[in-house]
Length: 138
Image (cartoon, rainbow, N blue to C red):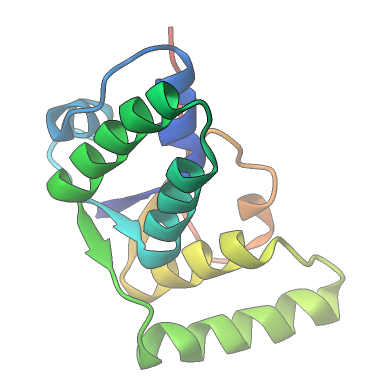
């Protein structure tokens, strides 16, 4: 199985001052391919644009561009849209709605048969059939 990395993982690593390298993710998930959902790329890029002061923005941009240059980005395409629609309706009917971006990540994971690695598993645990892994940092 491959692993889809949630934005929260990158935020947790950055907050701990841990530089990102694609090989870091292979250590977290040995022998498995790693990727991110397109919405994760968007969240990371928005974080860069919101960063102040300029010095912090420059550091964060380098961090994010390193991620985007080293990890595959899974598209939001028609296949994901179909899974997303079904999942949104199912979760709504069960009263287990989750955040819009987490729903997109979950739908991407389900579509492409990727587990989701997150530092915040609470919402993802509501998604039936999704393998959720929690990041543990020492």
